[in-house]
Amino acid sequence: MNDLIHHLIFQSEQASPDAEALVYGAQRLSYRGLAALVRAAASAFLRGGLQRGERVAVYMEKNVENVAAMFGASLAGGVFVPVNPLLKAEQVAYILADCNVRVLVTSADRLRVLAPALAQCPDLRTVIASGSGDLAAVPNVQALSWDAALDVPPAGAPARAIDADMAAILYTSGSTGKPKGVVLSHRNMMAGARSVASYLGNTPQDRLLAVLPLSFDYGLSQLTTAFSVGACAVLINHLFPRDVLNAVVSERITGLAAVPPLWIQLAPLDWPADCTLRYITNSGGAMQRPTLDALRKALPKAKPYLMYGLTEAFRSTYLPPEELDRRPDSMGKAIPNAEVMVLRADGSECDAGEPGELVHRGALVSMGYWNDPARTAERFRPLPARHAGLPLQELAVWSGDTVRRDEEGFLYFVSRSDEMIKTSGYRVSPSEVEEVIYAQAAVAEAAAIGVPHPSLGQAIVVVAATREGTAMTAAELLAACKPRLPAYMLPQKIVMVEGTLPRNPNGKIDRKLLGTEYAGVFQEKP
Image (cartoon, rainbow, N blue to C red; front, side, top):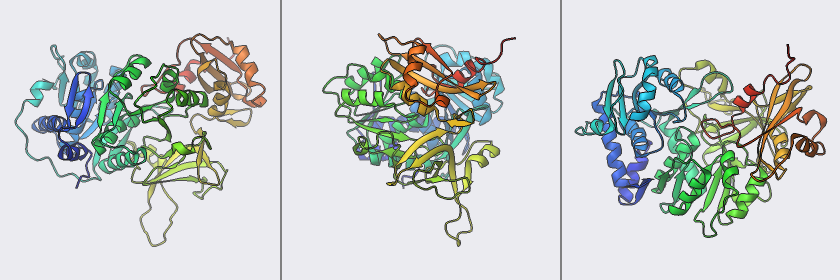
């Protein structure tokens, strides 16, 4: 039975050992080569004393060692914790301490910066570092080079594991407080990989470009989806949007996943007429219509898949490409092997057109938040009993997101609970305002946020950046909004900025940072 996440690599090794599995720059590994490296990493962890269920953190850029460490930890019976390489030392130390990491895999360069903060991680026992140079000393922690750690005899069989066991912990930023660790089982990850591969129609001939951080469930999915069908995953740590285009061309990529801010940057590039992209996917926020239209024009042979997901349930919905012209604003319907409901606060089903909370049930529902029973109980709640004879209640993910469904069952996003703007007694979805802002051809990026206001409760502030070679003032943008928005939805302030809007570690526009930056704009000056 291939029920554990590392089995994806081994089953593809058995089917096509010489097929290309992983590419990073000049490094090219077949499934045989990748499987051997994963086994060597697992032996290193087991020889180092890793016990069943203990955590192995991976803090490095996307590379071969990163992938081998994650899947090697899984093979060894451990739990891998991918840490975004953009995070700073204190943020990394918080994650390592929060989930009691035993082994850290990083680079020698990163270790030198990180070492002073590791004193906050009392459970850390071993650091394995790739790259050249001396390894920084960490008190009470064994430091090994990657090559030395893997130069060990094969270890014995790891402890028995089943698909209900923990496989990974992914840390995701909350609207308030510290990041929370979403615990994924092998079953969660396997169900997700198989579901996504099925509706994307992935085959061994596909080549998927891994652009997003592997600490982001959507980024990690590029690996698991590829490995589930014996396809090839190509890793890239890009600096500029054109780096992505160049990789697509040189590696003959067939599948590309990105978030809206990156698509905004990719859409205006000069894509070749013979581009090999078979499909593109979007998640992590709604893709605005001008961006989607530009991509469809630039990449007429690539089918766009618009998707919605949350880390707590990986992926919930997708819109089939053939429905795009009829309902371009829709999130689609539930992915295979999931049920997505729109429920009222009492758990009853909403009528068509009635806004309600998106609730996800099925094999992709994760195991909860690590070491956080209160937030777990808030988000993972039982469904109303469907069958009186079943004594145990099923837990589902209550997303906190407001959606509606139409008469045909297609879903439409309304707002995120932690982003809803409450102004003058009205509740305003940022996306409603942003849709009007993005309709202006000169606007490249925009974010509508709610900030404290002495009389309105919250005021709407729009932060926008224009496209290169264009110009637009705040007054002109406000004038364009007035015919299309009611008075209570008009921005009280528009800020035009140069360049791009700030991003969070997953590449999304950082609304939390913008909210903090502009929180005091309407406060009275002393």
